[in-house]
Image (cartoon, rainbow, N blue to C red; front, side):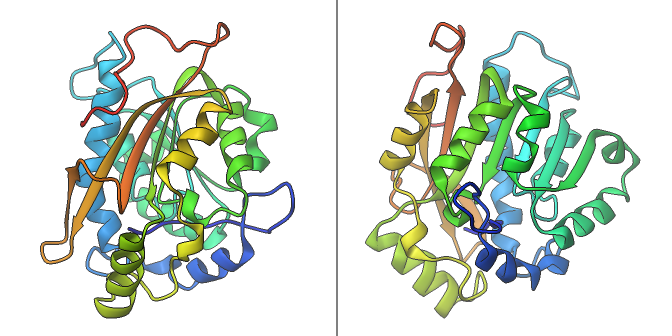
Length: 273
């Protein structure tokens, strides 16, 4: 129930300077599993298998021990590398971008402890818009986990994802629905009562209903394949899948190919992982 943040808020940028300032104060705490990002650490227990298993279901190439070998992944709003690292361990070639330099320094330092990851992961202090020209149709996969509820311009963000993703490439998003329940649980309980995330991390007005996200994806060249509810248990600090998308949810979408249709063998829409 956390995330990374946006940048200099211009008409052509998805980055929000207010969000940047929030996360600058926390940049050194990314790898404290009991700290402000504990919910993101435990989210890996479900988001990493979701990404891995979805991609494997779409591919005939399987590398034992390194199932995502050869897959080029862009981790947008990578923060301190909490999702980039496990994807790198699965064999993927990961580029992690974040507009906040302090986050990238933290991610680079932590990556340096593992020589294997040092080869597989590259971090850049950059917004998504800034890499579009150099990375057109470059990536097989984009992950934007706990990011879209922090961007300044969601449609610009989705358009940029489409531009840097190869045709028939996959986009994975996790975010928070805009409901009364998400306000109570995501802000009142999580921030104000339990302190699971720092107070002020989220703004309910920026939460994104799945219907709105699906519409933006479909109108920008994507086919939505799955929308799955996610549930966080603050007592156990653990995540699970649920049918309800009323608070947290995950989306898998595929960029349509030249004929306007995704490739063969795609998972059916709205199926639980």
